[in-house]
Image (cartoon, rainbow, N blue to C red; front, side, top):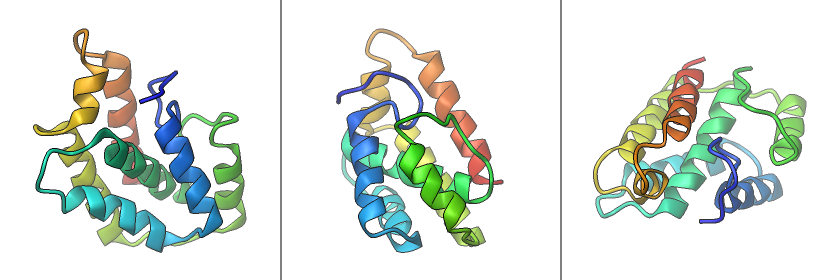
Amino acid sequence: MGAWAEDTFGNDTACDWAGSFLEKPGLKAVWAAIMAVQNSEEYLDSDEASDCLAACEVVARLQGQWGQRNPYSEKLDAWIEANPTEVPEKLKKAADAAIERILGPDSELPELWDECGRNEAWHEAVDDLRRRVWG
């Protein structure tokens, strides 16, 4: 995983997902990334988890709950501002459940971030995203 920061868009995978999302934007793409994690019964790959966290950012930002805004989220943020979309309650619940799955056992992403001990900054960023998902 090419990562430079603990926030959601501080890695190549999430930025790639955002680019793909912008090619065919909408809640269908968000649902797909979230459900891929939520329905996973095997060891959760870090790329799927990073895609899901990026999708969860869309859920939060569509509700005006902006996370860190920077050049990596700039195009996605512009799309969100130009395309107000109602976020269904069940999508918020699915996003929350997916984040729980990412933080749980059998998930590669927290293992990578916590290789040298608990990475508080990453965990705080994920906790913040989880709060923002609920609007």
